[in-house]
Length: 166
Image (cartoon, rainbow, N blue to C red; front, side):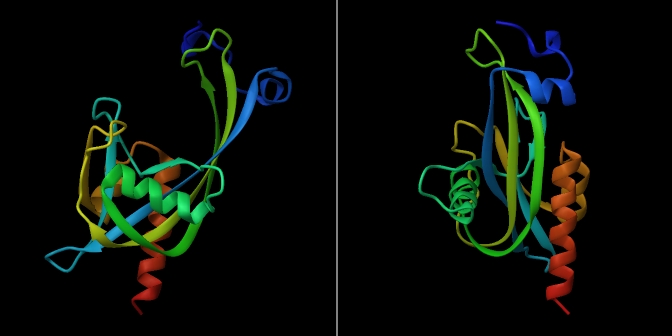
């Protein structure tokens, strides 16, 4: 098994010609509540030993709509029940899957994100995939999120919430 650091960079040639590849479709959410101070807060999860803060998301299961996947994944990873208010956008990226593989597999990932209002449940890090979960102000969330593409989804949520409050 090769380490990811030993693999070639993912360029156009690799995307077209690597033999072992697959596509993966996931969905997740920017789930929010209005906190005690009246400010909007969103739930984020931490992974990789608490070193990566990110939005809850996961792979679509057979027979699920994208929206159902987003709601299920937020519930599984955060403990919160949500209600979808708007589709925020799509993130697409490529990565190497080396987990339990002799030959690395190239994965093209697509993730749909929804703006969700928290309507039930309790914030929980009970999922084995999650190290921690917490509420953050919108400004804090933009600061702590690991990935720029997810910061963009939070920016879309901020714009949507500002438009809806007028």
